[in-house]
Image (cartoon, rainbow, N blue to C red; front, side):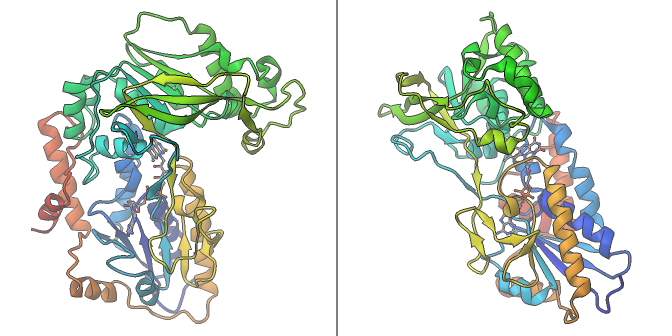
Length: 472
Ligand code: FAD
């Protein structure tokens, strides 16, 4: 539909959710209207967790950047990097300047274990910090990560835990060919003595949160044995349950079961073991560092012999309760490094945003923020920090549809000033921002730097360096 004004839309964040939403909007709106989409990003560089979350040895996944680059190149799309919305510019200022504002700023916080010892000992590290270090996020380079011990425990059994276990045990020559940060590469090359990694989950083997692709990759690493004890299956009546699970869950469970049957202690130098039904209750250490974790043992409290096809959905499967098994003594796993991989957490970036602390999402109806006309949300901030990049396409589609229909039905919409207004505010406030051309200069310089070391790119790790390349 042709509108009688040129809609101005802005997006807060430049990760997958932001750029997929921009793609849908361009498809729906730009054919009939002179639409403008302005993307505001806190960092000087775009792409969110594709650049700073996805593991460096997964360059195939990072290739989605090519499609996002095309979106940014669109003449109707502008990029404003190094602009921290909520601090440099308020949401109310964006709402006054644009017809629609879309929040796509992802998950900035993290969860805590809240158990004794968590904050006391060194080398108790969050997954978010390790991931940021190996991906070269600005200001992550000073992390005190000591890899001189032999054993690591990772708490949590999602894909991020698997990424970290893989990176910790991968041959350094393989990592050297990726866009891993130089700081991390030096550490892995010269100081990494980790040979045994335990990935430990609170819930049972039927609730493993990782995907089959990531798990399978773990079992194919050179000189690393991935193992799981048959003991993990004793409770679940595996032969009875397999055919009653939905297909993806069935395939993972079957894979794990076969792995457990074939788990022979081999001569592999390094080991990654998976352990389920263990909740950490205390972190142990001495004045120097972490030394171990104490776990209570859990059990499913459920009769797996009588399922009647009830467990064909993940939701039902995840509703099976687990309880402490009081007949089993607590267990201690010794470790020299403890990684907490228990999830990211959404936060609010501006008190004006209707944010529900309990559910941890921006209050919304199909992407339209409740109680704030013109405000929308998409991606992890809309539905919580779960799922992979392709999952953000359905968020993006739903939000774009909602916004499109609101825009075309709203009789009161008028021409808005858009970037003209915001750029004058940024200048007034001395905020130096990076535009598309500036990002292009950073991108090209990083790729050139990478060529010198046989890497796809060598990221700039300091914001000052990025701004220098982009703006001077
Ligand atoms: P994000 O990607 O986090 O993007 C949010 C953007 O908003 C960021 O650029 C951020 O800097 C910006 N921002 C934040 N605050 C502000 C502000 N105040 N003002 C302006 N901008 C702001 N999925 C896969 O498919 N494959 C994988 O291999 C994979 N690996 C992953 C590894 C890790 C460690 C993590 C955490 C996730 C991984 N995922 C993977 C999941 C995937 O990254 C997410 O599904 C996806 O990135 C979510 O997109 P998003 O746009 O909602 O958030």
